[in-house]
Amino acid sequence: MLGWQARPGPPPFRADEHAVELILFDAEPLRTHASEGESDNEPLHVDSAFLLSGVVTSTVLTISNPDPGLEVRAPSLPVTVSPTARFQSVDLVIIVRDCKAATRWRLGDRPFTITWRDGYGEGHRDRAGDFDRSMATTLIGYIDAVCGNALNR
Image (cartoon, rainbow, N blue to C red; front, side, top):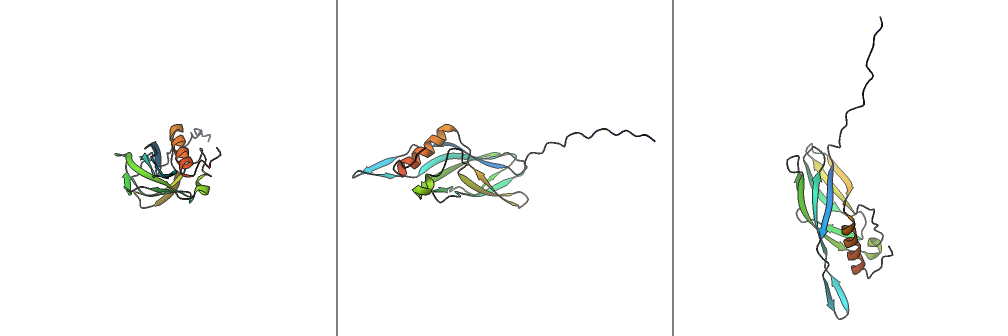
């Protein structure tokens, strides 16, 4: 008996159902206070958002910097993103803690690490922090100002 079987097609496309992203949009202009020839730089405030590009409701628990050079704070955490509320704004506060370490940061880097728990209770950790060229310029300018223009970019 001869049989014919259709050739199998490509597997169906499956997006990462757990994908959560951090996007940096805009930063408050750096305020510098002159005091007897020295500058006192305040933290950089960054308008950001979490975007759920997957399909599973997830709660972002922390944002950190893998390098000790920059500290990032997100007072509004935890934040939940879901298929019905994919976009959640978050204000970040960025502080330079170690100029030597901070000046190693490069434009192509995703500067932060986020941790989140998905709707199934599983934990995730990923590099994060997508931004455009103007945001990169702001981040570099902030590090330059705090560290006394120590960057050689």
